[in-house]
Length: 177
Length: 426
Image (cartoon, rainbow over all chains, first blue to last red; front, top):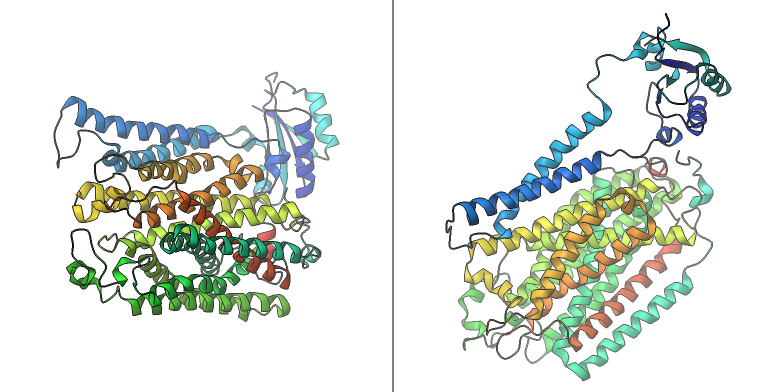
């Protein structure tokens, strides 16, 4: 089988081991790789060199869209398209447009956040190549894994294997794509 | 990864005494008080009394906010705020001095020939716009069961009494736990908080009505107590951020006490209360604007227009509050980086503290009017007396805090939640 493998997976027994291995892989400049742990490890995001999520920015765009939509809609309907005096109030005032704009801000922010989160994290994901690794279930129990994908520009079967070995990884295995 | 190395040495009382800072604060405070008192000869008793009311209410609001935050911490069994809670407990020692500093206003109102030095409804012969007196005013008579001198005096001292009593219980339990580590102190604090929260909510509402809202006793707003509450908590959170960063800078919080996530939490709470303040303040304005009933709108008209329809200074102050108290801090504190970068969040906190003062000025000072019934302008010599009052009362509060500071450990080292707080994470 000459097809390109999905990547290399290495096993670690202890949290500090995988933590320091992550730092090593990060410093080697890899981009497409991941760590699999049975529980959240605090600070692992930093050890992996992950930046803060961009979801808050998507939320902000959603919020601004919602606020603008509310204000524009009320101005359009009440002061432009079909002028109507209601309760002796001006055709348009940000005052009475505010509650609706505020609610649309929250609604659009919520939509943007949830949709943004799913887009960014790629969920739902029903299949992943690492599931082919027969030991992967240990990653939900008592072992830690580092996976480096073959599509990473720095990936090189020999060098990457050497790096994982240097990091203290055991059972370094190739995962088929 | 956050440091888990926090151990007892970091929690020992700071070697560097705060005694010299405390005496400096006291001198500044006394200087401010003396200057304000001398202002009577320059601007008259009424102006000074109004300025003093702003100063005392400002610091009382912050102290109430601290009391609320300590009790909320206990009632929800919070973890992250255990470290900063100790500083709030020190801050609570200011209540006694605040009560003493408030009393000149009560005494002046009680014993002056005319009782309407500040609050017009206290004097039955106070003349209203149009020739009637307060004693003939049906709007006063209907409210006189609540708005009367006796209720005001008893109420004011009862409020301070309640806050002092709750504070002393909270302080005693927390400080005693440092010594023996007994869990009974945590339980005692929960009991104090369970009764203290409704008591404080009611007393701060009544205090806001007596001290501030009754300056314009024809007016009513069910949001008033909530508005005051929002300012109390925002003030206390801002002071908390400033104190936290001051201790970090001084070196007290090094060695594992300070943790960026604690700062993130307190800033996020300050952000939440920014939104809450805006919600409450907007609701009050919007309902009055929308209903457009003269007996409510006059309160805002006083703060926007002169009798001839021209715009007065308070209109601009209203805009400063809208943007400075809500829009700008709201947009800035959306950012994680701003919330967790010490020099940025400290500036935001100081800005909020300044704008709370302007908000109180906006609510209190237009109670003083000229012969046409127009509010006296914001920018005048009176603003100087407001500032001397704030510095005077603030100096005394800072002194009370700094005097309490070295008497206990820097953090509640035997609190059951202290470990969770020191290693707090997102």
